[in-house]
Structure formats: structure tokens, C-alpha cells
Image (cartoon, rainbow, N blue to C red; front, side, top):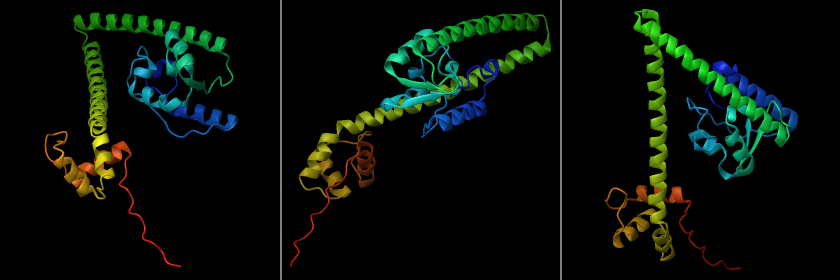
Amino acid sequence: MSRDHQRESGLGLDAQREYIKVAAQQHGWQVVTEFEDVGVSGSIHPLQRPAGASAFANGRTVVVAKLDRLSRDVEHIAGLMKRGNFKVATMPNASTVELHIHAMLAEQERTIISERTKAALKSLEARAAAGDTEALEKINNRSQALAKVRSMLNRTKGHDTQRQQADERAASVKDTIRLCIHDGASSLQAVADCLVARKIPTARGGQWSPTAVMRVMQRLGLELAKAASGPTSL
């Protein structure tokens, strides 16, 4: 789902959810989670948007309310047809040719909207320069809204970067942790001691603690070896 140009499309988030809900009921689809990109330009490829990239991960089938909620770019849609798997709630049985035609229409609509927006902004700036206080207030409001969206996107990118760095750091000690467990480390403290003994520093350059080991092992999907059960007598 996207909030980009919702006013122009007339399709807010609630309406998108309803379209998808109805289509899922009619076609037996099971919606397992929801992804939403906020304030992201439709000119950005869906796989380069934070939520869009997550939605298409792991070969998922992605359902969008309308094709233009996925993208208004023909090249984007054509690429996703080859690399991803998606369905459109308002046209669930559309053929590849029909999707291409609708993508072309969506791209044309995006161009018209862009030209209309630029013309309106130019007129607004001219009125503000002439002393129109209402026009000046609208420009200021628009600038503040854009700044808020940029700040939100920067925070999202920052979180994604931190997550990636944490994944890379964890991967760098994966083999060592496995060796520690293989050599008999049966507790988080034992693994921490093993890493310290091997002179492997934490991400911040400090020594390992059981909590730090636990977090890394959870990220890696590793578990401590279970103690073998003792012999039983008959």
C-alpha cells in the first residue's frame, strides 16, 4: 500500500484494504501481513522502497488494490512481472497484456499529475511573491510537510542500515560460535567465555556477556546443544 498521490487517485488506505479484503474473499487468498510505504514517491522502484522490498522478499505473492498503488512506471511494472509475483485486487484475472496497458495509462496519469502540480506550484509562488499571505502560508505548509516526510524516510533508511550492519557483524562470528558450541560450550556464559578466550571482540570492541551472545545467536538462528539424556535401565 502507498500513500503517494492518494488524493489524486481517490484511493486512501481504508479503501485499499477493503478492495484487497473483498478480492481475497472472492478468490480464496490468505492475507498474512500488510506493508505500507508512507510518503514515498511513485517514481521510486517498488523494490527500492522500504516496505516494498520487504513485501517482495522470500518470493511472496503481493496483492495491491490498484496497479498504480504498486507503481505508475511501465518499466517498473514490466520488471516486476519478471522478477516478482503480484496480483491486483481490482483486476485479479488480468493478462500480461492488460497489465501492460494499465501500466501505460498509469504512467500517463502520473505525467499529467506532475505537470498539473508544477503549474499550480508556479502559480502559488507567483502569488506569494506578489504578497498574497494565503499563498505564502500554503507554500510554508508544503515545505514543512515535505521536510517531515524526508525526516521519516531518513529514519527508516537509518534503521535499515543499522539492521544490515548488525546482521553483518553477527555473520562474522557465526562460525566461531558454532565452534564454541561444538567444543562443548553448553551455556551462554560458556560461549561468551569461549569468544573472549579466542580474542573475538563485540561490535563495540568490548568483551562478550551472556546477553550479547543471546542476541547474536537469536539473530543467527543458532541454539545451544541440548544435553544428552542419561542411560535408562529396564
